[in-house]
Length: 145
Ligand SMILES: Cc1cc2nc3c(=O)[nH]c(=O)nc-3n(C[C@H](O)[C@H](O)[C@H](O)COP(=O)(O)O)c2cc1C
Image (cartoon, rainbow, N blue to C red):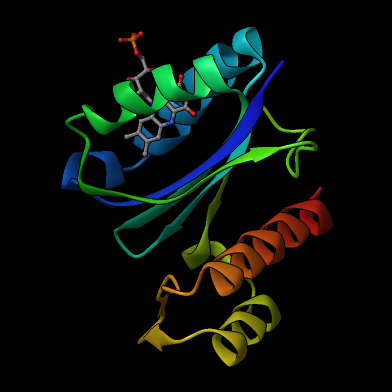
């Protein structure tokens, strides 16, 4: 079965940033994703989302169409799409990392490596750096488990 990894970024609309809204979204997303073999990670930095979706090409494509039409965010920009032989987030049907909830050390580490505006980390335009940020986010989540 052909598998792919799709990465996009977007800007959150205010209602999804209200208390508990993203957590509710993640719960539903994880349930749905596990039914279709999709795994991934969602980062939130200020009001900016960055999400990686991995899984069977057909399901990832179908899901991205839904996500791209979701009124809870806007300015959706596809940043990477590639066929993969192995998944990076295979343990997670979807995990959220809100960068505003990091402890001081974690926050400092990211701010040293990536450009930032105030407290918010800017998502790198360079694909290697962007992937490196996703891997740092994964490691932060693993450490917190
Ligand atoms: C930032 C963001 C990320 C999302 N991630 C997922 C996801 O990983 N899986 C998922 O099923 N839905 C995700 N959704 C929700 C979908 O856009 C959609 O609302 C959901 O799949 C339900 O669709 P349906 O009830 O029309 O089938 C996300 C929405 C947003 C705004």
